[in-house]
Amino acid sequence: MSTVTVTPLTPAAAAQLVNCPQCWKVPGGPCWPWGSHLARYQRANRRGVLSDDGLAAVVAGLDVIAAHVIVRDGAR
Image 1: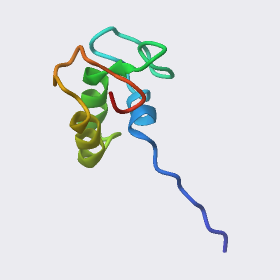
Image 2 (image 1 turned 135 degrees about the horizontal axis):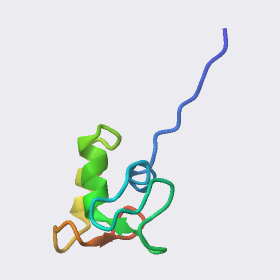
Image 3 (image 1 turned 180 degrees about the vertical axis):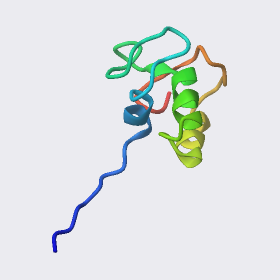
Image 4 (image 1 turned 180 degrees about the horizontal axis):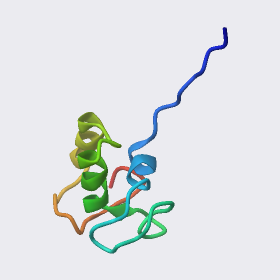
């Protein structure tokens, strides 16, 4: 019997699996070279790709919680 090891996605990687409702960036890369909109993380959470704990970790590093805020590599 073989064992499969699954590595959990980082919040940034999970967010890149969905399109961004703020700028409509398609899945596969960040909204901007330096990060993605918080709205994209929120959408990933609603779709079940990003856990509530993962979203909480992203939001914890923000000064302003608004959809248009750019999250840099999972934390601002």
